Amino acid sequence: MVLEKIKQENDIKKLSRDELLVLADEIREFLLQKIAVSGGHLASNLGAVELTMALHLAFELPKDKIVWDVGHQSYTHKILTGRMTGFDSLRKYGGMSGFPKRKESDCDCFDTGHSSTSISAGLGYALARQIKGEDYKVISVIGDGAMTGGMAYEALNNASRIRSNFIIVLNDNNMSISENVGGLSKHLNYLRTTESYQEIKTGLANSLSKIPVCGERIVSRIRKTKSGIKQLLVPGMLFENMGIMYLGPVDGHDIQALVRVFREAAKFQGPVLIHVITKKGKGYLPAERHPARFHGTEPFDIETGLPLKKRLKANYTDVFSTVMCKLGARDEKVAAVTAAMEDGTGLKRFHNMFPERFFDVGIAEEHAVTFAAGLAAAGLKPIVAVYSSFLQRAYDQILHDVCIQNLPVVFAIDRAGLVGSDGETHQGIFDLTYLSGIPNMTILAPKNKWELSDMVKFAVDFPSPIAIRYPRGEAYDGLKEFREPIVYAKSEVIYEESEILLLALGSMVKTAAEVREGLHERGIAATLVNVRFAKPLDEELILNLAPKHKLIVTLEENVINGGFGEHVTEFMCRSRCKCRILNIAIPDDYVEHGNVDILRKELKIDALSIIERIVLEG
Image (cartoon, rainbow, N blue to C red):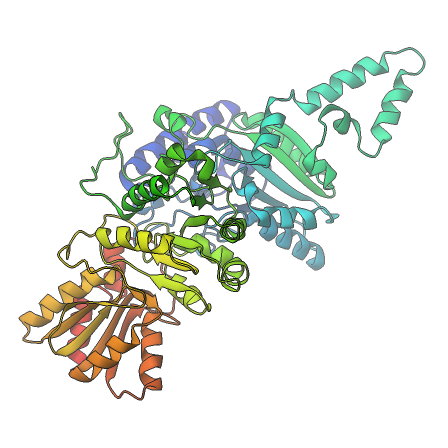
């Protein structure tokens, strides 16, 4: 196998042209075999094999710096830098990350995980190189999906002023996670279908130069015009107008063509954007046909492409999807907004049923929130469906554009809490902290699937900003006999006894029920309260129950700093209540990738660990 010759970075340069073609096939087969077992990002990696190989052939690692946007397409890069054996532990606790990690290899120059950051980081490297008088190349690789993010354009605006070499590779596969939308997608589609600029330029220049007497002078004059021949042939060239040299489109699966254009781009003193056309999922037919489904996949059967583990129960996203369709049918003012996550947030069915009230704004969470604020100000009922870790990007817009005006925007926050294999950048463990400090914001969390349904229905008619956070994965269907109506700022008492008061929020209600049973086995009585509202606190209930118990235990799947537990502690101090309080939460740290059950044990927020901590508290 050619793949066995790759032991470390730059080994690829020892291969012949024929071996390179074999290597591309072997890498795809290797990725397919490994990801079918471990799960991971498949389609994006299959599409970037030749592109990555060409980057490694044209540049010298780790001296030169490749910054991967998002990083979910970096598996081939990991293979080519000597990490092939790490794929047996890919995305597992203590194993290799599914994203670039500086602590993992010197060839990973920047940690990524969220979109639209690579041009900014690459520009930082390029200018630092200039200031320090160093000599290396900087290449930012960004997808056309990530180019829908406003941060990418902020970076392009600044990159246009650099006078040293800076290479931006636009990996264009017409997809982010779902299919791309908007003006940029149309612009890139036009460029894809336009005959290669270089071929047109060469052909036209040759034809004009053959005109007797004046031909060469005409060609020279055109070359000297400010906009140049490119503006005549490809009108409205976006990147050229910004002062960035544009090369392409280039076949992203032609290794030699890619190497040639990379080497040419490296000679230019200034910013260069290379437009590369790739096919997401290339080489595996199910991924080519369904790239969104194979963007991030669970273990699957290679022959059929179907998941190995059949879902027997609905997950929280499914529940949200069903409720949204019902609400859309009942109320013509209900609108849905998502940031390139139509499938992931469960809005596909709503889109199909109510296309005029569905808005996918691309990877642009900031715009999504302010756009929703505009919808709300105009009298609609917008529901912004977004992952917890992605909503962080729109903090300023939540505060300024929604909450200051007290607009009735609903935030449906999926993947709240630990999400597992994607690691630090995707764990949804900060939303309670960053949302609870904003005036006018109300925050809820459901204990099970029925309560999520009830909360979404409650929220859609709520007159102020409101957020509902719910976890990834199978929806809890326990405690179904407890379904009191949702009342503003009121908790639900599930079991009332004595000794220990368990105040559990959202996903931790299930854990608290297990804790209560474990304490009962040890002869310790416990009251279980489904808090429901993280903000505002049900202060009346807390003050009523606290004196009846010797220990108050708060339980949440959020970092401890600024979370629900700290707010309870602050309230008790302010109320001069002398009850002891134990806050169960995630430590003040980032949580790496791994199975969620393993992470919960390591973080000591699983039922057994909590029981032990309560017993120690006496």
